[in-house]
Length: 235
Image (cartoon, rainbow, N blue to C red; front, side):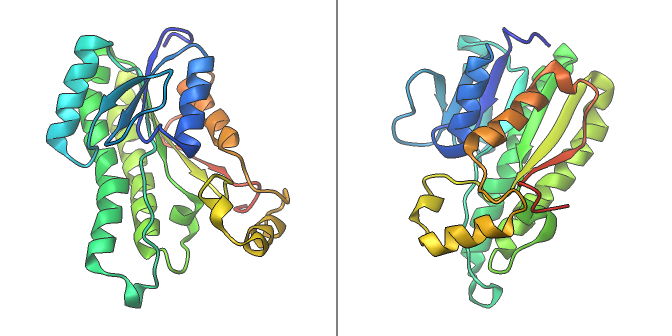
């Protein structure tokens, strides 16, 4: 895989961690395509409108990318949402929505991109999981299930596609400080920082750096792995 001319596709690349990943990949020399469902995508990237939960929309999006841009060699599945609540109060709709956007989207994107990667006999798939998918968290049963499912999916894909030189890995971020966490109470944020061995929250760039490793030839012999980017929260 070329370090300077690969096409990289990032879902959920319009803000936060996804945007940091897109920017880092672009700085590293990749041509970056981001997906978006609605609104206006950020400038500086190729952008394709796509509903990652819809097989039809994903297939149409990939056809457009291949025709107008080229064939992706790197894909980062970052799209995700939360709908937190205690299990006794969680609606079926909120459970299904989180599974659909966080997990089914990974299935759709991987199934579409594997056709390209199998033909070219190369590729790197990076799935954005979470430490919550590793250890669970009260009030996030739906989110934890989606992120744990992503880990099992990642390991299975690594086994299926490895013989064709296609790698599949997952990143499990911990407490990452973004515009979403900026809305939390200061005492809550400080409490999180104090509980982390490195005594700080992570930055989107911390996660992006891990993604750059998986996207590059530096991880050519790494597949089926989960990298916790959590400041030592999980040991």
